[in-house]
Amino acid sequence: MPAKPCGYESTTERQREMSLWRWISTVLLRSSGIENPKAEIKPEGTTAEKGCFHGRSFVLDGTNIALLHGPKYPELRYVLAIAVHLRENGAALSCFFDANTLYLFRDHRREQEACFERLISEQPWAACFRVVPGGTQADPWILEQAKKDGADVISNDRFKDRAKAHRWIWKRRHGLEVDRGALQIPSLHLSLEPLARPEDYLRAGF
Image (cartoon, rainbow, N blue to C red):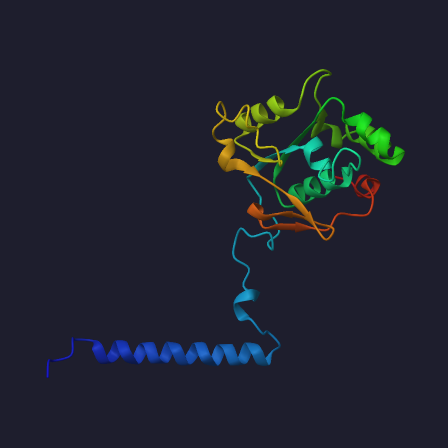
């Protein structure tokens, strides 16, 4: 019978002790009401942690986000929900809207139109939220700002006509969707419940 390698017994004993301690820890945690101990550990850098976007920059495609349900049902509160969450968690932020965005809100609800006008004209909001000049789209402004800042872009637009000149966008664009009333940005592990009205965000401050 071949001899066991040096340290075999001690290594095996240590493994048994570690397994025993893991089992004891699991039993104690469950007795405290924690069914899944691993779920209680918040890894650094997840959205469960305040300030998890500290040091990161984002550019929002404001019109694209607002039109998740199509041009007949614009939702300014979607843009504000994302912007406020990112700012509260330490991110630098800018947002661009197409030149015709005001008319989209005007055709839907006057309350949204009034909020949008405040957003682009009153500080501190106006420092982050901008409407591009008439006759132009926001896409080139979004891409140039993101390139300058090394920022990620939040938009469902794939920028196909400009992606060849901005190849970085393929890795730094984050798409979004609405699922049962919650805004989902899977690549950022974000799930946000927007407030009922855009004016609620303006009232709370930025």
